[in-house]
Image (cartoon, rainbow over all chains, first blue to last red; front, side, top):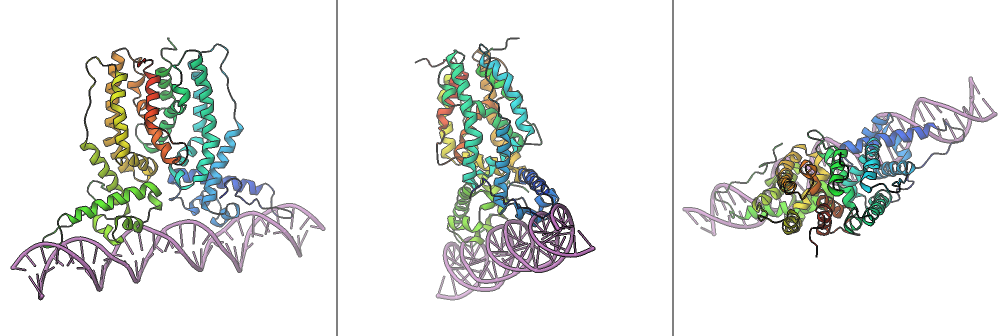
Length: 215
Length: 215
DNA sequence: GAAAGAAATGACCGGAGGGTCAATATTGAT
DNA sequence: ATCAATATTGACCCTCCGGTCATTTCTTTC
């Protein structure tokens, strides 16, 4: 199974609108993301996706070979968008790493929630075992880069004596864990007592970087 | 839906073995846990569970009303076992909290993996949205007590000046996050590059409780 | 060993839903 | 307006699987 380009973009020569098809495709992907997110893969009906996208069920199969391909396309699409807005922030020369993270991470987190990326995170987390190859892609494209970046900052902090050596740079996931947990928690216990991702991350920084922002 | 006792333990008067049925039931629950864990709820076939338990499909319905009830029984059963071996360890009078945690948590973690509890954790995490009530129960029985305990230790550490106040006691999940992430990770990326739960927790302690165990 | 009650069996049923395709609608070119 | 190439439709098909139940297999009792 290749999740890369499993769509079949219909060629047009003397047919209907040239960009209409792109719009239809996009509507389908959007509808699919929402439905998969709400109901999960198994409980999502192709007819639901079609209805939500304002098309007939058969239309889906003009763009995607089957349900799994639709799911794969959703993930790949969102990941592709993610690559676009990728800026690699650097700390200012003598900025403490804690302060730097306090500055850059919260915007990233809220953007993660605004875009569909946190939804995709939860989707991959729950349905991942069903799509091993897709999971591998997700890991390489979405997870590993983040871990690499964390490792860079961790090394810097350790070099500057802000953290004890090795702990974070050996286990960079530690830094991502609070945010991930918060997103999963909010997916599961949506109704009552949602976690504030930002607040949790703040507390985490407090804990790790000690009494940095004495106010 | 009541997941409490959704089974129908068949009464015996002049029938076969008295404890045979209990064994059959246990075999079914065990087989179900394994299969649900491997394939997820939707992809689990009742016939698979039956085969794995060494019974016919129909037998399952002598003990559980339907597939959802079987799933619920699996979770409740494992949770019940968990309650049994519940000891509430206390730090020694002047033991640093970091050292205390280093002493008691690793055994708990490995026991969590030996028993089915970490599998159930992942099951609830992925299938939870399908079983809201069950998820609620899981949270109350399995999660909240742990968080309460963490909060107690966090307060102690803060009182003793080992941690800055409020950060951990306000967000006790921070302490559980590494272990949870590790278990989910290992479920997802089982094949390559598994995470060592214990090592990750060690690193977490290093990070948070600073240069405690200077060796 | 016969009888009776209980437990286990597995062929069978029904409906749900993924996927198909002949028919239809839509559009641009002429 | 007409045509041709494409896009869309939705009724239909067909498989699969959760759940049932008449039948068979045990086990205990007398």
